[in-house]
Image (tube, rainbow, N blue to C red; front, top):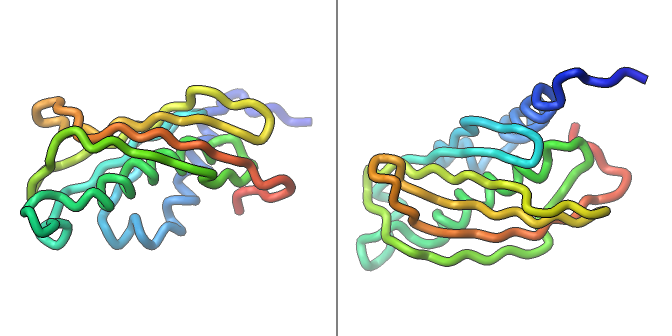
Length: 145
């Protein structure tokens, strides 16, 4: 048996392979900026097409950004993990041109289940825009291609 001396290397490789196949993130310009076992960071610039009827970033895009960070964080171990449930709290609005960063971090991983928290913030002034909690489940026998 070969033991990887750097588990972060395998985590990065798995997350980047997942990101390369994620057409939604590619289309929206969501970049995977950093990853480690149980943790991931993604970034997105808000565009005019992401505005809702109130002239603010549509909550669906904020959820999607946090969900992407969650997906990469919970897929850093090898077996395929998917969302079982998730919720988000929208705290502040985001505007056209804002760069948003979502960082997801593992809180608990027991058996097939995991809990991850993601914070979406605007790094220009460190304002937290949204908080997200996702519950993951591993699909037995499935591994990330």
